[in-house]
Length: 266
Length: 337
Image (cartoon, rainbow over all chains, first blue to last red; front, top):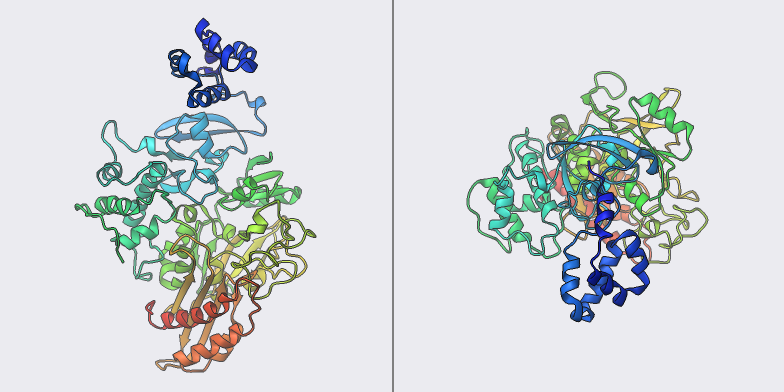
């Protein structure tokens, strides 16, 4: 993989004269660092804050141009093993592509997907296994990537929201979420969809839930009531409260029949 | 998270040796509780030994030994696999229900049976490192004793610790007379009855269990289950799903022939103590009696009379009382109230 950090460093040192003047005016205390190592995330955020305060009005064209450019950040892809504390080599497959990385032993799969592999679909909500926003599918099972060490993924197959569509055709669960408006802000959506995809497979295999009535009967494909869907999806929290739409979307895929939203059901 | 070394163990005996050699090492299985606690700086292992690829995932009938006719559940079998296994569903439906009452689908796909037994309390004073906690840092005091203790123990607590043990699975295992199989670094195997596996806090709340450092849970064994026809796991919580128990009850009955007389009964409670709480007093009162609501109430009231609630959890006494009665009724009626 290309050393992106080095590339950025070269690029960002080439600030235009207007841009240099902008930084000299607005962030004089950071100017020498910017000229030295380029614009990093902290500089960028500071500039955004100033822009938000309306201070940039006079130089808005210059600032706008600047904000569309990539800024300098530590290289995301390949680190030397010796530069990582307690580095662990790990090879695994993500959305069909083989990946080989050296990771800090502390690195979660979630951070690895987002920060090293640029797969930012999986979201960091609570980072403590309580919200489900980071749900991915490992070896066919839905799990929480925030509580999974990347080091423990050796030889495994990981599927994220980015890997569900086949080319330009969305996965049926993705289609149904669009049709039923199964989200408002969208932050929990990748986790909801990954969770639902794997949950529907669990139901096909005859897996039970706490609200299933027939525990002792042999496993066969489970027909899910809305109550069953809510129970089985309870590990995915939606702060916007799009639950009726989410349940409708999942029920439509599960039953194969058009479903109306139900705002209150027992 | 503090730095630690990570290594993958390839077989049980080398894993146990690696652990035994390093007092700061911990096993990593599902990681659902351990990693969370490491992020909070509550757990600070110097080394993690990943045991998730060791095997020990078999779920199989026991054809020999003291639990002949029973079942062995692999220590590293996932909670989901255990709950949905045909042998468990058919012969130990109480265990299936209890596992499925806990956590979420994602967490049950990660969590192992052994790890479930070793999960630590969710007491917020244990989790918050700025607070005193005798379990986290012995000798610092108990924040919950005079603090917000709505979720805490009503049985068996001490002045040092009022935390409750969070597992649902273990509550069913307590009712089903489970035995925990463990192996040490010398390769010796031993059995710990589930009732002796977890401890009451006493003056050593930092010790959750009687499992010493350097031992691995290889399996959980259950004897042949005579309660399969009449059992129920009732969990009462603040939310309908995905929340720890305020009170839970695993109830299991064996009737005397075709009569309504109780031949044997097991009642275990969750959310009320530092370990799964066997309601022995209620059990004793019910053996040989008719399975009637009046008798259930008498037994439940006698059990809960022993409770010592804290400032904010007196409601758990009445809740426990009613939950025992309801769980027994549902066990009698095939899961219906």
